[in-house]
Structure formats: structure tokens, C-alpha cells
Image (cartoon, rainbow, N blue to C red; front, side):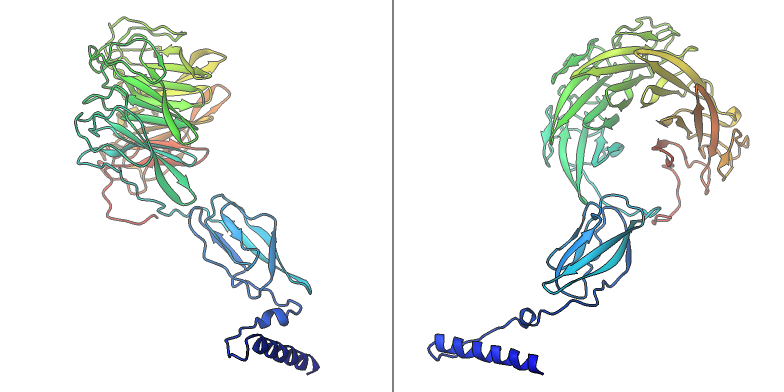
Length: 499
């Protein structure tokens, strides 16, 4: 009671003083009793003891039960913040986190008090993070036909985009011109927190109608590789820099463009052409990159060579039409040079080596869909020397067509798609077997291979759980570590949710 009397006396005294200073005029007066009543803290609580969050999705605002000065230990995951003045937890988490206990301390002049809260990121839960459209979207541009992602950078191609622009636009705009039908374009998007924004709109410096720039693309860090397999110049050398040939005398010889980012600015670093470029080679039909190494497929290339040429040359013979080839390039500083010209050791007319290509470290795998039911060729590098290590074939060849139409590699694991595979199996078969049933035309399948030492063996045979005729399961394939993603573009279930 004595403490309350003192408070009353202080308030009354302040009112008298303020009234005197105001010349007797009545004025509103507000007093923060929380300051005067600053006593020991007690009963610190948050409304929830734990939270499981989804990366790049805002967490609910979490408020404590009392006021004070706040601190937390250990440090919160990136994107989540603790307001030191209010104790409020909020933000957009951007990194994965196992279940972790955090100690929150509230303090004032009298004492400190603690409580605990547990954060962890969700696993196995997918959410729609963004819906992306081209800033110059038009009818039949095919925006999204090809895409690639690395970290916070997403690259989307529209290989039928039709502007006649021949420069890179760094920023959020794009040309609305339609003067070069199906010349193609690539759009680069960057994520900041939970938001995606366009960083660049990229066109070939020699863009012309029907080049199909962007039909293939790949990204590694700040380096982007874009294929234009119908580009038609007769150039046979690499142009390191920002230019490209305007010649059109070698129809569908194909070209590949290398772009590099500095900060937020993209610029062309190189214009790649096959050292034996000729009309119809379709060079750039597939591309892949890992660090400073690029692999380019040219499934229309026609030489009769059945060996690998390590170095900068390639065979000019044309006696095995569309046998196909893979070209390997290595960067030193900012200079790209051809490191190898790879041909299958059983190269034959119509094999189409280079239809697909993927790279991981010192291993390249390339699909040859025309080799009987299809095949995937594995090439490995030792120093600067490339050799063929293995030919991968399906164990159920009678059921398979287009084996190798898609493929991906991560370390010692290769996944090969065969979207015309015919079996009615609806299970994953771990091991070296596969169904020989042929009752579902073009249902599709994927095959997983694992390397031990230098030996490759089938590890699994993948089929869709809801397998149906014509689904084209395996038309697109990707692997990163253990997870594998397979696309089925003609699957026709009406479901609209993630299961």
C-alpha cells in the first residue's frame, strides 16, 4: 500500500508542475505507467512452443507475453528475425534446418528470464512459390519449354519467341517486336527472399528467324549456355567475346552461346561453333555445363569416326549420316577452347548421338535415341583426355523405344528416360530387372544406373504409379543427389493438387 501511495504522490506532483508550467491552462497529459512500474519480469511465454516452417514462405508473426529487451541463442536460420525491442519473431526462412531448440532471453533493469522455442524446416512438403510469365508473352512463344535452375537463379527459354532484338536487356523489360519469327529468347529470374524478379532478357547477337535460340539451355553458377540448333552460319571457330557470325550459308548447322553474369549484369562470353560445322548438323540440340566444362550435342553430325579426338579438331567426313557427335569445351579464365570431339565406338547412320547430354564433374553421358531401341554413352575425363567408359542399354529392349531421349547425372548416378517404353508395370523395381509387357504403348519409363569404380549397373527401373497408354513418362528427367524427377507431359489426370 505504501508503494502505491508513493506512485500516486509522484503522479500528483507531476500534474501540479505541468499545470503551473502551462499557466493554469488545462492540457492533455499521458504518463507511461509501465516505466514507473518496471518490476521483475516473470512468466515469459510464446503462443507456440515449436514451429515447422516451409522455406521461402512467411512464418506467422509470433509475439511474446511480456515486454523487455530480447536476445536469442543460437542464431536464427536465415530469413527469420527476432525484434530485440518487442521479442516478436517473424520473417521468410530461406534455409533448411533440423529440429533446433532456441533460448530466448527477456531482460529489464530488474532481472532476466528465459524460455525456449523449437524451429525446424518441413521435409516432403511442396508449395507453389511463384507463377512466372514472360514480360513480352505472345501467342505460341513456348515460354517454359526449356528451363534450368541453380540456387536462386532460374532460366526460362521461349525458343519460338519472335523479336528481332539482338542485344541483352539487363532488367525487367523485354522487346515486344515480332520481326524475327521463332528466333527465340531466354529470360533470367533471380530470387530474393520469397520474391522472383526478372534479371535479364537475352537474345542472340545474330538473332534471325527460326534459329530456335533457347531450344536447349543449362546453367552453372554465373554461367549460362544456350543452344540454337537451327542457327545457320558456316563459322567453324570459337568466338570468345560478344559477337557472332551473321552468315547463313550452312542451314541448321547450329550454334551455342555462352553468357556470364557479373553482379546482376549478363554479357555474352563466347559464341561456340563446331570445328567441322556443316549444314544439318543440329549442333546445340542439347547442351550441359558443370563449372568450366561445357558439353554440346550435335545429333545430325555425320562423320564415320568411331573414336574420340582429344583436342581442337573434328572429322569432316560425312559418310554416316546423322550418326551424331558430342563436343567438349573447357574454359581457362574467360577463354573457351575445344577439349574433345566424341563419337560413339559403334557410330552408325541415324544413331543420333547427342540427342541429349548431361555432365557431372569428369563424366559426360549422351543419348543416342536412334541406336536400335536407344542407348546412352558414358565418357570420362582423366586430366585432359576423354575416353568412352560404357554404353548403357535397357534390360527390356523389346519394350523400349527412344531410350536416351532424356537423361541426367549426379556424381555416380545416371537416370535415363525412355518415354515410348510400353510396359504396364506400375511399380518401382529396385534391381536389374524390368517389365517385358508391351500392353501400354508410350507409357514411358526411367532407368537408374549406379557406378562402382568404373563399372555401371542398373539400380532401379521406374514407372508411374498411375501408368497409362500415351503418358510419355520419362520425357523429362532430372537428378540431384538422391531425388529424381520425371516428367509425363501427356498424363491426363484431372487432379490439381500436389500429392
